[in-house]
Each structure stands twice: as structure tokens, then as C-alpha cells.
Amino acid sequence: MTNPLDVTQTADSSEPLADAPEPVTPAPVIPAEAESQAEPLLPDLDFQFGEADARAEVQPAVSDDLDEEVYSTTVPDIGPREGDVLGGWQLRKDLGRGWFLAAGPEGTAPGLLYVRPAPGWATLAPHRLLPRWTALEGGYLINDTVGEPLTGPLPAAEALPLWTELARLVYALERQGYALTDLEPEGLLRTETGELRLRFPPRVARVGERVEPLLREGYTPPEVQSGGPAQAVSGVYLLGAVLYHWLSGQPLPPEGVSALALSGLRVPGIPQLLHQALAPAPERLTPTALMDALRRLQRPVATSYRVAAATTVGLNVDRPLNEDAFGYVLRQVEAEGGQVTFLRACVADGMGGMAAGEVASRAAVEGFLASAAPDMVARVWDANAALLQALGGQDGGCAFSGVQIEGEVLYLGHVGDTRAYHAAGGAVQQLTQDHSYVAALVASGMMTPQEAATSPERNKVLRSLGSVRQPQDHYVHTLGDPLFLVPGSRVLLVSDGVWGEVPEEELRGLLLHEPDAQRVVDALLDLALDVGAPDNATALLIERVR
Image 1: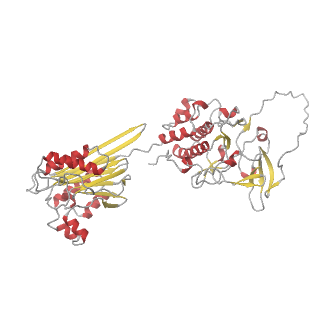
Image 2: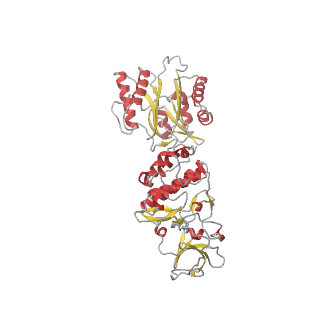
Image 3: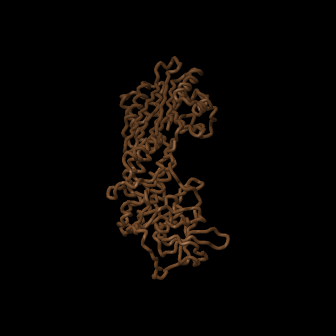
């Protein structure tokens, strides 16, 4: 299952200046006077700006019985006007605050031009969410973005990944020394590929600079409404308002949102996050703290493993004791700081014909499971030391295959002719190399695998635990690189009483096609018994469940 709060860091959040398209300018904030005109804004673009207005002083009411005379302004026009041409684009309609609806050269669609000098958004580093723009002589042309406006209510699984992208943008602005003070909610678009894009550049200000007061009901942070210094936390408030609208389908109420209303969203972790995002500025999350909170919130589902095992003494009257041994330790902890999954498992095959083979295999298993060594090679040597101590000078040893899984990563340590297999993606791979006489002959080309399978020398091993007392370099076989286990993958540990008697194709077929882990190991032992089970047989299967 895909977590919808996946916020694994991307280049946008940790390196906001790299690998992103040119920044785009958000929808301009339109004065209240302009919005009150009967003629709708942007008729050719099929888009209306939201209510983002400069706070205007409330004038006292005037009685209807007074005559009113309107005087023409005596202030000369400054800057471009309707009808002017900039860079081949004719300014058709003044939308206020430096924005014009413009007609381009023949065959081009109408566009938006910003004609005031040096807007803050024009200095931003490129970011993939921002629209592209082109600098013209005396203005900036916004390249239109195609997509559907995001309107609530949205399912959390849809809203949260998109909102995380906005959080990365605000984080990137903070790193550049900017604060997000306003954006056009209806300009938040979802493209055909499902990606989030801003149709208009956002309004930004340098952190610490005093901002022009404005009001977009249900969105504007209180400190921006009052015209205070720009703060990075203002962008977090805006994001909180956006997420609340997306999830609830309603904008924030003017008096603010209550804890009861937040708890009604019923998405674990989200009421708490919004409470912190919409708090008063001194208590509000910073953009950096918001990213940390999102990482905690989107903590991946804990890895989980299932272990099944079985062993049999077999049918050989000359082997009255089971000299095989197996064991495993599974530890899983889930808490606020994260989750830890740890699994250590092994199979040991006591040396037939030697004294106390069952003592050797059991001691090796216990020594491996109890080892506190930092790596797999050292853990296997700890198993060797435990074996030698248990034998007390007697002649004995064992073949050994052990694994340790940390989260989703597997490490292997192996000596002798026990085996480890890995099954994933419809394929089975043998992870170990047999340290046996016939395996060496096969590797040198002096014997075929078919001949080795029936050779009377097939039980002779060249390496085993207990045969050496001091650690030796390259004696323990390990994987060149750690093995990553995906959900559904399996790892099988077996003694030669299994792989030496069960046909390879049947072993692989069970690993790939039998869904029940315990049935796999039971079936392997049954197959060994069906052919006489001349040796002890042990199988241990590890399956990643999630």
C-alpha cells in the first residue's frame, strides 16, 4: 500500500535551486475597487482571480440626499496604459496592481503581462511548481499552464502528496530568504500527468521586509493582514489554509478554525499538523519544522516478516540423532521515533560421522543468535567460538548458513554445504557457494553438476565451523553487496538433507508458487522423506509480508 504521505526528500526540498524550470509568477492581487466592476476579469482566459485585496480604509456612509461630484485625477499617468504595446503584446485590459490582459502577435492566445519593475517572484530560483515566464522590454509575460483547478473536498490520499509539494516550495523559499505572503488558490492546478503546478507566481517578500497589507478571506495570515514584517511562517499558514480547504471543502472561517473542527477531518496526524500550521506566528511551524513534521507523519509502513521452519531426523537407521539445528530471533519495535525490524536466523548441519555433531550444530546456532559482533563475518566466528567451547576439545563441526535482516536489508554469512536461496520477481537465486569437494570439481570443469549430484564424494566438505580455531580471511562467504528484500520476497535456508534429495525444479517451484510459508518447508521435508531421507533434513523460510 502506498502511503500517501510519502515525503521522501527530493531535490526540490534539499536543493531548491537545482533541476527546476524557470520560476513563474503567481496570480496578482487585485484591489477591491477593480473587483467591484461589473465586467469580469480575464474573460478570455476563463479564469477569475480570488479576493486578494489591499486593505482599504472604511469610509463613513453618505446620505442619499447629497449631490456627489467626481473630479478627474490631477496626477499624471505613470507607466504603461491600455493600448500600449510591450514586446509585441498590446495591453488590452488593466487588471490593476501592474497586471494586464494582453493580446499577442497574430495567432497567439491572450496572455498575462506584469508591467511593474522588479517583482519579487522574478528573482526566485527556478522551481518545478512555478510557471515559466519571459522577460519583455518593460514587462514579464507569463506562460500559461494547462491543468484543472484543485477544488475540495479531496480525499486525503490525493491531497497530501500534492500539499507536500507545496511544503517543499515554501521550504525552498525560506532557504532563499523569502516568505510566501499570498497565492491564488484557484491557480493551483493538477496537470494531465497528476502533477501540481502554480498558474500564477506567488507573492513573496524578503524575510523581515514590511509587506503591504492585504486580505484574501480564508487564506491570508494575520501578520500579513496587518502589514507587519514578512515572516517565513506566513507561508506555512497559507499552506494550512489550502490543506484545510482541500480536505473539508470549505475555506477557513474568519474567526479561525476550532480544535473540534480540525478533529472532524478524521485523518490521523492531520488535525495536529494543521493546528500547528495555523497557530499564531510565534507558535507556528517554520517551513523547516513543517518538513520534519511531514517526514514523521509519512513514516513508512513497518517492514514485517514471517518465519516458518521444520526439521526431521530422516529415515537412516545409522543416524539415530538429528544433528541439524536451526534458530531465529525476530524483534520489531514501532514508536514515535520510527520503527525497527531485526531478524537473525540460521541453519547448522552437524558433521556426520564425527563426535557430538548435534552438540556442535546447537552451539553454533546459539552462539550466532547471541553474538553482539558488528558484522556478519565476526558473528559467524562467534558461532565458531561457541562451538569449540561446547565441544571441549572433542572432534566435531558443522556447516552453517546465517542471515541478518535489518529493515529491508539482508546480510549473509556462510561456511560449508548448507544453502541459502532468494526468491523474488518470479526467479530463484542461490546465494551461497558450496564449500565441498564436488563443488570444487564442478567449478574447475572436472565434473558436471549432474555427476556431482550422484557422486559418492558429494558429502565431503572443504570448510566447516570447528575445523579452525582462529579467524581466517575469506573463510566465511558473504554477499558482495547487501540484498534488499521487497514485499513478497522469500529467503530459504536448508541443510543438504533437503537440497541434496529434493529435485531443484521442485524446490524452486514451491518457493515461487506455494503461498503458505509453513507448507513450503513441510512439503520440502515430505519430498526428502519420499526418496528415503538418508540424512537429517532442515528448512527455514523467511518471507517479507510487507
